[in-house]
Image 1 (cartoon, chains in turn red, blue):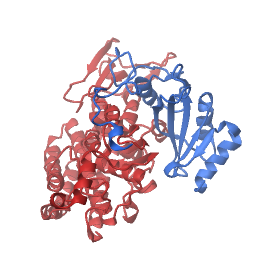
Image 2 (cartoon, rainbow over the protein chains, first blue to last red; image 1 turned 90 degrees about the vertical axis):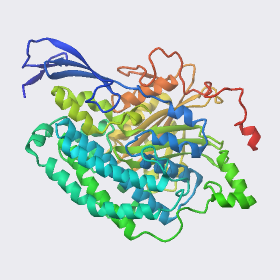
Image 3 (cartoon, rainbow over the protein chains, first blue to last red; image 1 turned 135 degrees about the horizontal axis):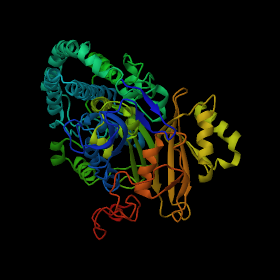
Image 4 (cartoon, rainbow over the protein chains, first blue to last red; image 1 turned 120 degrees about the vertical axis):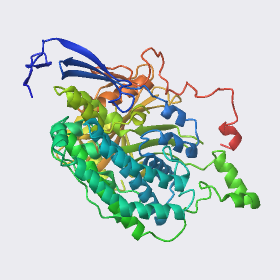
Amino acid sequence: MSELNIRNTGQLVSSETIDGEIAVLNLGPTHPATHGVFQNVLKVDGERILEAEPTIGYIHRAFEKLAERRPYNQITPITDRLNYCSSPINNMGWHMTVEKLAGIEVSKRVEYMRVIIMELARIADHLVCNSVIGVDTGALTGFTYMFQERERIYEMFEAVCGARLTTNIGRIGGFERDFPEDFKRKLDDFLKTFPKRFDEFDSLITRNRIFMDRVIKAGPITAERALNYGFTGPNLRAAGVDYDVRVMNPYSSYEDFEFNIPIGKDGDTYDRFMVRQHEIRESLSIIRQALNNMPAGKHYTEVPDYYLPPKDEVYKSMEALIYHFKIVMGETPIPAGEVYHAVEGANGELGYYLISDGGRTPYRLHFRRPCFIYYQAYPEMIQGSLLSDAVLTMSSMNVIAGELDA
Amino acid sequence: MSNNQNQLVLDALQQRFGAEVLSASEPYGLLTVEVPSNRIIDVLSFLKEHEELRMDFLTDLCAVHYPEDPGREIAVVYHVHSMVLNIRLRIKAFLPISNPEIASATKLYSAANWMERETYDFYGVQFTGHPDLRRILNVDSMDYFPLRKEYALEDETRNDKDDRFFGR
C-alpha cells in the first residue's frame, strides 16, 4: 500500500503516482464486474481511486407511485422486484405490514411456515453474494457449486408457489397452499446434503490464502461510520454492531427460535463474507427448529375478508363467491392509519411505511430499502483503494439494483 | 402513552421543547410527534445527543403530500431509532407547498444525503444546507415532482376503480 495523504483541500492524493496524471474512468452502468446496473465515475491515479461518484436510478420503476393505485393484494408482486435475490422476504414483509394495519393475527403455523420460507430465501441470497465475492477474486469453482444449491432452493419455492425468482409467495393471512409433499421431500434432502456441500465451499474459499489476501482490509468501514450511514443487516454486523431486526423487534414468531447473531470486527470485505457464511448456518438451524416444532393446523388464518376462499367453494357457495369477488376487485376492509413494519431482509432492515386513508389503495407507501441507504457510503469506503478492491467491495456490500432503484 | 419507553421519550421532548411538540400519538405503538419545521434539526440533534435516549440512528426519511390541507401540504417524516433502548420514534414536520423548505439533516446523519435527494426528487422539498441537492432516481431534465398527488397514475377519465362505486 502506498501512503495517502490528505491535502488541505481535502482531496486524497497518492504519493505513489505513476505519472501524476489523474484519469476519469467510467465503471458501469453495464460492466461485467458490477453485477447489476450501477455506474460509478471514478477519478483514478493509476490503479488507485481518488474519488467516486455513483449514479443510480437506471432501473427506476416508480414503485411507490404504482402502489398508490393498486389494491393491497396487488402490491405483493411489486415487492418481488425490490431485492430479487430474496423475494419471499419482501413478500412476507408486505403481508405482515398489511396484517399489522388491519389487525389480523395469523396462526402460529403460518408464522412458522413463513420463517422456513424466509430463511431459505436468506440462504439463497447469501449464497449468491458470497459465491460472487469468490468469482470477483478469481475463484469460479465455488460459485458453480453454490449455484446448484441455490437452484434447489428455487425448486422448493416453485413447489410452494409455482414461481422461482419473483415469487409472489404467500397471501395476506397465510399461504396459497400448504407445503406440498414434494416440498417437504426436497427440504429434507436439502437439509441433509447442503451442509456437507457448504462445508466444501467453506474449505475452498474461507481459509484460502489468495482469497484472504485479496479481501482482508478491502473496503473497511468503522461501526461509527456505518451507523451514521444507516447501515443495517450483515454489513452493519460485519462492522461489529449486533443489530438484527429478528431479535430487536421480533416478528413472525422469531422469538421462539434459538440462534446466534454473528458479528465481525473490521467491517471489511472478509468480515462481511464471514458474517454471511455464519448466518447461513444459523438459518439452517432456524429452519430445523421450525420444522421440528411446526404446530398443527391450517396453512391460512380464518380471515375471509382478505384470504381468497378455495376455488371449488367459489363455484358452489354464495358466501365464498362474494368474498372472492371482493378480494379480486381489491375491496378489502382496511382501516385508516399509519404503520411502519420492518423485517430483516437478506441485506438489511427492509421497512414498509404505509399510510392508509381507508381507501382501496394505500395513500402513501414508502419502502425503506436497505441498500439504497448504505450504498451511499460506497465512495467513502473505496477512496484510496485499488480499482480491483472497489469491485470486491461492491459485491460484498450486496447492493441489488432492483432494490436500489425501486 | 400506553408504553413506558414512549412516555420516556415524550417526557424528554416536552421538557426540552415544551409546547413546540405540537402533537403526540401512538399509532400501532410507534410514538409519533409533530414539531415545527424550523426546529427539526434541534429536535434531531437533541435526540441524537441525549445521553439516556441515544436516538442516533436515522432509519428512514420520506415525504407525504396532503393536497387538502392548505399551508401544510407536504409532511416530511423522519423515523429515528435508539438501538440502545430499542425505541423507535416518528417525527413529522409540515411544510406549505408554496415554499417547501426545511433544514437538511446531512450534518447529523450521512445517511440523510440520499434520502433527502430522493425526497426532493419526488416531492420537491428543498433541504437547505444539503451539499448536493440533485435528482437521484429520475432524469435530471424532469420538471415536476412525480409523487405529488396532482399527477395521476392512470387516465383520469377512467372510473371503474373509483371509490364511489364501492360505497366509500
